[in-house]
Length: 251
Figure 1 (cartoon, one colour):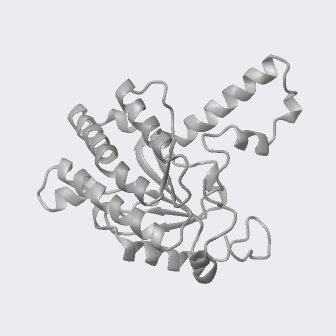
Figure 2 (cartoon, one colour; figure 1 turned 90 degrees about the vertical axis):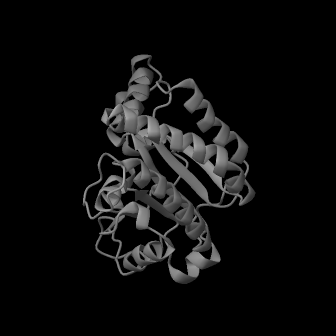
C-alpha cells in the first residue's frame, strides 16, 4: 500500500492534505434544479467522482475517502436504491480496470455481511485486483455509518473482555481505533461536503475528531479539480492545533 506517513513531493511543497474525505451531496437537488430525474443527477455524480479521483492523484493526495452509500440510504425509495446499485455495478465494471492501470488501490469500509452477495463480490473483487497498487488509495464507504462502525468495534472488544482475553481497564481510545474498519489508515486531514449542507451525516465520526471541514455551496455533479483545489487552499489557511495551543505544521 502507499506510504501514507511520507507525503509526496507535491504534498510537501504545496501543503496538500494526505487524506481527504468527501461527502458527495446534492445529486438529487442538482437534477431537480434542471428539471431532470434524480437518476440523471446520480449519473452525473459518477462523472464527478471520476474527475475527483484523477485530480486527487495529480495533487499528490495519498488517500481519498468517499461517502458513496450510507447505511441510512436504504430508506430511500426502492427505485432510487436500485438505480444506485446499477451505477455501482457499472462503475466497478467500467472503471476498475482504469483505476488499476493508474495504480489506484481500492479499499472498502462499511458493513458487508448483510449485502447482496453479488454486490459484496464486486466490492471484494475491486479490493483484490488493486490490493498491490501503491498510488492513490481510494476508500469507498459503502453501507457505512459512523455510529455503526464504532458499535461493531465495541462489540468485538466486548467479546474479548467477556472471554477474559482483555481487561476492561485496557480498553482505550487507541484500542478502539484499532478495531475500526480501516485502522491502518490515518485520520482524514480534510473533510469536504458539497451542496452547502454543514453536517457530518454519520460519516467518519471517530476519525474526523480533529479534521478540518470545508463546506462548498456547489452540488456534487459540479465538483471538479478546481473545486478540490479551492478546498485545499482553504485547508492550508487553517491552523491545526489538535486540542493544543501551538499549531502543528503539515498534515
